[in-house]
Image 1 (tube, rainbow, N blue to C red):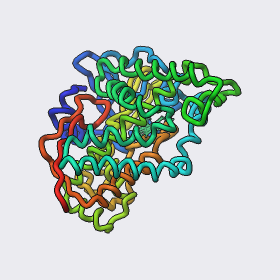
Image 2 (tube, helix red, strand yellow):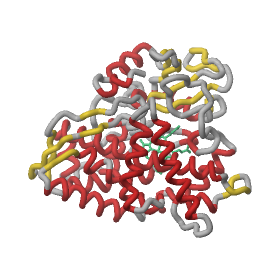
Image 3 (tube, rainbow, N blue to C red):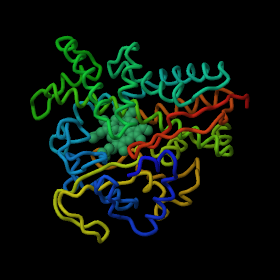
Length: 385
Ligand code: HEM
């Protein structure tokens, strides 16, 4: 829970030492906030699947101050809701993100990736994080999310603030919700097929969603849609730069791009952790957890658990099976999972087709937060392969 560990230090060393000592550890932050850190894969998966014991309604991310305080938005957006309400809320938007629905975005994803990479090449390099990775996912998804092109910078800025500043994240969320509240006012009556239109047409338990639920669900989806893929893409590029043999395998078509996507998701673990709260006393791997205790599944640690992954500290492009938890597990399993794969496959394919090689032009700058594992800046230079 020290933000500097993620920007200046190496959290993987900390997690490895913790895993060696056991899968569950009690943690107290400098602020006094407490949680149980689950660092092993098997126990992590158990927590994610047992929603009856571990609720999402008290928050899904660790907070700087008090993890037990009531959570704004609880029970009103999919990620902070338990069944049966969760089932209805998720169903309300799920059809927008099925593999078939998002397949249609593939051509656009290739086009956007090609154009962003061509611009980077024309400049001889630049900041891959801000000039390519941040712009790519939102440009592909803007239309289905109902965000006009001219509003993309505003949404990108607000969603970035909602994740990269754990102590003031509510300001970023506030701006995203204010934006969609405005959109709700102008859309009602002329609802289309975009996110707001879908939510306006949705029914949960036979009734329309409230305006509050609609706006909170927009926040849930738009923050997830714009702020996660870029970290997988940046971390993925850095991994390929640091593992030239893996990059060569990909470029020469010796490995399935889908397998590479999953290995890069495991390797980068963009969602560092997810949080749950115990609803009754229980036990995890022999450790007693009391009702009301916060429990964090450290996904990035579970993804390098040697009891599940062969040579977990190595990037193996063709790794199979690859049961990483990067997209979560259980009923809150990432709604955008199919889209993540479409986006990452398109970018990797265009990168390999572009005939350019990227190398570091300066040190990457990592976000200082325990919420996402990602970079603010990734300076690269371009050279022909
Ligand atoms: C590499 C990119 C992504 C990663 C690593 C990621 C990761 C995750 C994780 C770990 C969860 C589980 C949260 C929990 O259990 O509390 C989740 C849920 C979710 N994700 Fe993603 N995500 C990504 C991209 C996306 C995209 C592009 C969308 C766009 C639709 C999206 C939408 C959601 C939503 C709506 C949920 C909540 C689902 C529910 O509660 O039923 N995610 N994601």
